[in-house]
Length: 110
Image 1 (tube, rainbow, N blue to C red):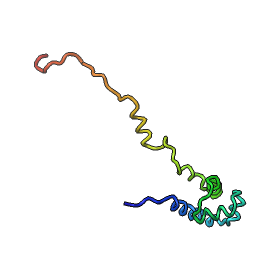
Image 2 (image 1 turned 180 degrees about the vertical axis):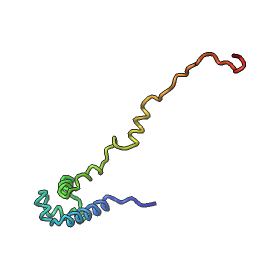
Image 3 (image 1 turned 90 degrees about the vertical axis):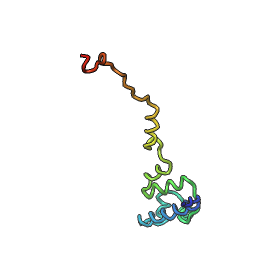
Image 4 (image 1 turned 120 degrees about the vertical axis):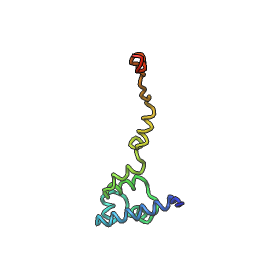
C-alpha cells in the first residue's frame, strides 16, 4: 500500500515543476518577477519547496501558461460521470402499463 504524501512533499514537488517550466520558457526569476509582480524572493522560496501565498502561486502559474491546470486543483463535481449517474437516480423509472389485447384463449378454443 502506497503511503500518501504529506503537504510538504507536494509543495516541494510543485516548486520543482514550476522551476522546470520557468527554465523551459527561458525565463529568469527576474523575468518572472517582472511579468507577475511577485518578488524574486517569493519565486525562489516556491521553487525551493517553501510555502508562498496562494495568489502569488496563481500569478506564477498564469505567467507560465499553466492557468488551465488551476481548475484541476478542485474539479467541478458537475462534470464527473458519477454526478450524472446520481442525478439519473433521482428521476422516476419508466414503467410500462400492461395492456390486455382481449381475452386470452387457447388455440383449440377459438
